[in-house]
Length: 262
Image 1: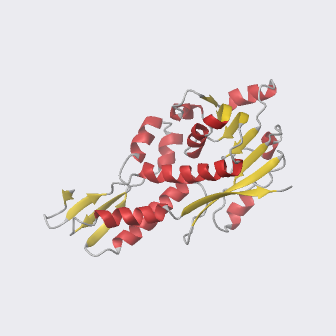
Image 2: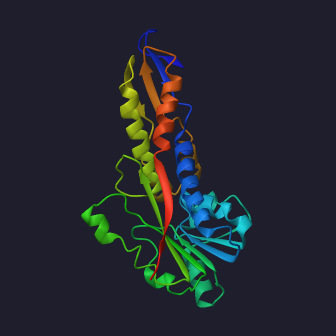
């Protein structure tokens, strides 16, 4: 806690960090996937998309698969893969392995969303289970036209569509970063209504610029390890209310895998 312009005004930072919101979302998505898999074990798991959710999900599936491969077109994202049991492939390494028929996954998960892995790439495999993330949050004409998640679900013996929404709230997409930003912003609006609060500042940045334009993984990790909000208040004892509001908004995020028969 710090003072503001005068000692009557306190500056408070939330105990909840941006990374805590991210972890809650990717954990929710991972739980939905594992529930759909019903405790099955796999020989080789192939996950497309390392960013935010992919690495967490890959780590969570290590005990259910003899081998877990994480594929991303950005080679520098290898730096976020801390578990040595996860095999990271950039797109060139993946294409070479595909041509040489060194990949034979019985579980394939596509988390790349809009503009990600094409249906043609997924058609190279015939896994026991294929799960594709649905990138849509609400009806947006341009997003619906760009979405090809159901077109990807043409292979595999058992197929599922990973859906993620916020209860009683609107997010344009199911992307983890979209949900993180929307969750923090909506919490700010509620915190602002507390008596004694002067204003609330969301401590969010353009994280994808750091990670994909600057290609600075270390800086990105530092940026998300900051308090989610800063509050200017006349009262010191609003900490519990701030955390309660943040927690309530995080709990609005729900994921489930929808079985797809086709």
